[in-house]
View 1 (cartoon, rainbow, N blue to C red):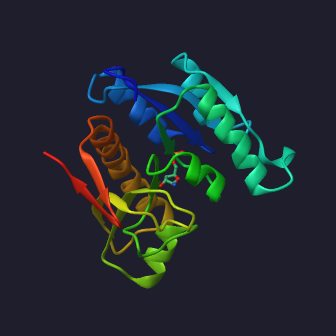
View 2 (view 1 turned 60 degrees about the vertical axis):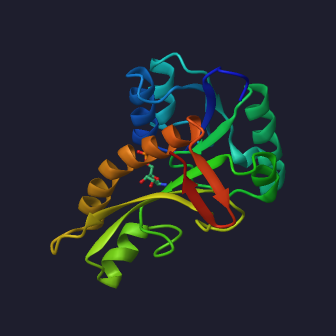
Length: 206
Ligand code: GRF
């Protein structure tokens, strides 16, 4: 980050963008001192693009179908993020696994939100996995991204109770409420320089 300038976020999305909206709202309120430099979507019809455009944030539709493999797609993503001078990459419902090309281009500067308490229930349908297993508590995890599926160092987690009559939809909706706050807190810690990584452990500085 250059001097005292606000941290520049590059937000990658694939869907509705409620997490993106929560970040936008907290930047507007002054809670997070950052600027969203660009929103990149691999889906042309992602509602997150509409949310971004409504706030005058530059949007880029970057579809993976045009690329022969994941690494070439990621190399092009890195170029876009660099062209917007992004400091921190936020995966806000971006439904793709990153390759080493992205991970090495932004070391310890890519964050993901996952709708379960990792390392439990990584990958897709985490909420249904939690219901099928019969856990009484699930939640969300914000973590740095490495080349695995939801395996990077954990920054913050929030616990959400599972109710006896929960469906995938009701549990997802309850977890999503906690995601918005937890993701914002993690981004705030990062932009304020209050995160230190030692191996797998993420320490919060005073
Ligand atoms: C969230 O549930 C997040 O945990 C998962 O994708 C969903 C994105 O939701 N990775 P939204 O697009 O932010 O509404």
